[in-house]
Length: 407
Figure 1 (cartoon, rainbow, N blue to C red):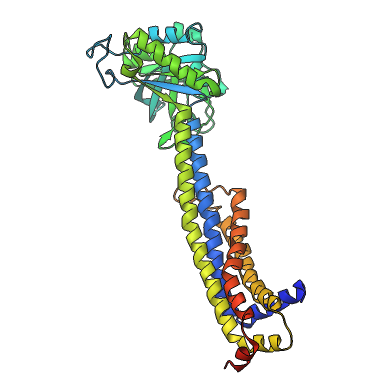
Figure 2 (figure 1 turned 60 degrees about the vertical axis):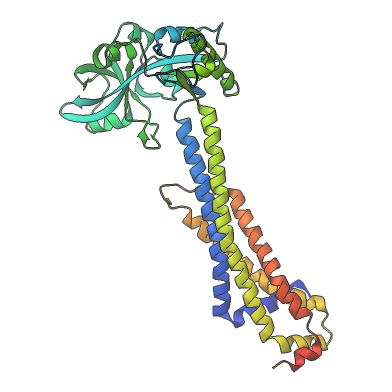
C-alpha cells in the first residue's frame, strides 16, 4: 500500500469521528503552543535581563565604598581606618603604568533633588562626574554638547538632562538647550539632552541629570574627600577580569590593606551578566519542562483515541488481514493516523504559539527562539509516533480469526 493510500485512509478515519479527533488535536495543540510561548517568555526574560545589565555600561566595573574593611582584621591596616574613594584613588587608577587594562575612571558624586523650570517640577537623580562617565555608562548626547574637562576644572554649572527629565520639565516644542533649570537650590544651564536609554529594572535610566562633579559638590552635595562610587571602564571585555584585579590591588595598596580586607566592593558587569544569563537559562529550561508535560498529556490523548479506534475497527482489521494484508500495512495505516493527528495539532499549536507570543506576558515581551518552532514540531511528530505505535502494533498483531469474531 502506497503512502498516498495510507494518508487517504488516515484522513477518512479522522473525518469519521470529527469531534473526537478535534479534541485529540486540541490536546496536542495546547502542548505545542505551551512549548512555543513558554520558551519565548524564557528567551524574552533572558534578553530583558541582559539589556538591563548592558545599560549599566560598557565593559565596566563599579567600585562601591562599603565603609569598613573585609571579613578579617587587616595585617597592615586597622579596622577603624577611614575608607574613602578619593580623587587620589582616581589618579592612581588612571596611571597606565600601574593599570594597563583600565581605559577610564569616572568618579561619581550623586544626590536626588527637585528639578524646577517655569513652574514645572520633577524629582531627579543628579550625577556629578567627568566626561568619561558618558562613554563608560553608554550615554550619548542626542542634542547639544557633552560636558568637557574644562567644565570640570572650571566648576561650571552646566548640565545634561535625560529624556524623562526633559519631558517633565519642558512643554512640547520648547528647546531645552540654553535654558536655565533649578536643581535643588542651584541654577544650572542646560547644554545637552541625552539620548534615551529606557528603563533598567525599576530604574529609569532617562530620569537623570549629569553635571561636572566639581559643580555638584560645590552647590548640592557639599565638598567631600569621598565619592559615592567609581565607574571604571576596561580596555576590552576580554580583559575586564584583569582590570578588576588591577583595581583591587591598587586600592588595597593605597589603603594600606590587603585585597581580602579591601573596604570597597567591586561589581564586575560581565560576572553579573554571566550569573544572570545562567539563571535565565535555568528558568527557560524549567518553563520548557512544564510545557513538555502539556505535550505529554496530549500524547496520551493520541494513544487513547487510537486504542478506541483500533477497538472500533477490529472487524475491519480482521477482514483486511483475511484477504492478505500483511502486518506492516496494518501497522502503517494506524501509525499514519496517529502521526496525522499530531501533525495537525503541531501546526495549529505553532500558529497559536506565534500569535500568543506577540503579547506581553507578566511584564515580559516574549521573544520567539527559532529553534523552539522546530523543536515543538519535531517533538509533536515524535509524540505521534511514540504514542501511536502501541495501538498500531496491537491492531497489526490481531489474529484474523479473533478479529472477525469480535462483536
